[in-house]
Length: 351
Image (tube, rainbow, N blue to C red; front, side, top):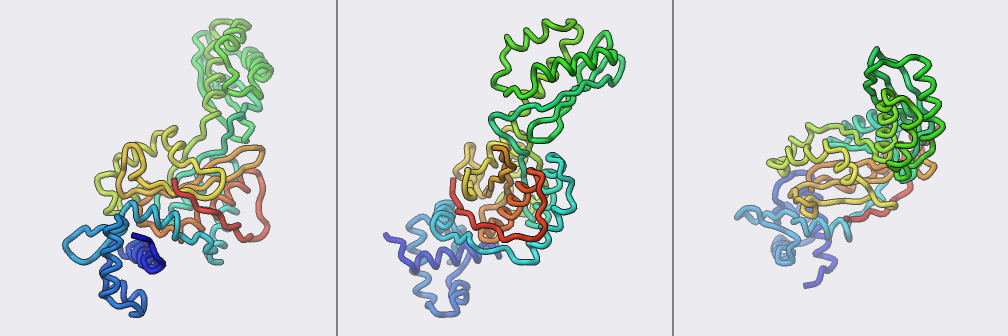
């Protein structure tokens, strides 16, 4: 059975109506949507045909239908018009939000994710800039007690990482200065993949065994720098959607695993991706993750995403998400827009 233009119009309408009301859509409601230009009998026939195609489901014995996972996939791939511009009021609100945020990368990500959640009404996630060749640009070692030292590292993406090392015999200022010099000479601008055990052993051989924990802390920071941090906002919004009942704990467990969350929200190089929970492993029915990549310059990139029910209004949330991605990229690159700029439409992709 072919998907002719009328079937596409009916499916698009049901997706739109269901995203607003969250209730099965009947032929009478659909007829009103089309201003009675199509009879209820014709619409019932089209709805039945779409059900046979697996694009609609009938959750109850009533005549109402809802989009199936397959129906949403078809809608996203073929019917979603993502060229809808963001309205001026929302655009101005976003500009105002970013003008007030601290542009240190971690703080910018934290502020942006909270603002995105509040503006959208969905759970939001933002990963910090990352790249395969991300390195440490500078180390500092600071004495923080008789038996502890703090290792501070500034990455080439501009954010700061810290680890505390236990030093049994204490750390003098001279020790701290010498360690910082050694780390800056040996571990700056070194990719994590190049930090071999042999290289680390050679570095440790140059210092007292009691100071090895400081070098180990620096090495751990370097290894962690290759993995982005993921910040969340609006987690309680997951409780607002009946479609996600029974899956909230599973979703939160996934999002709070930083490595898993980073993989989940990683967007393609171009366009915006929509991942459906039915396509995940393990499956989380009723879930959708809409993600978009932002570019921070110097080969660095991160992702911003909205997590919510499959029935979220994609045509509205995608322009909002892409506007945040554009602003995040500017902010992470250390740039500020002097005046609002129109976002370049992106091509939406389904994963």
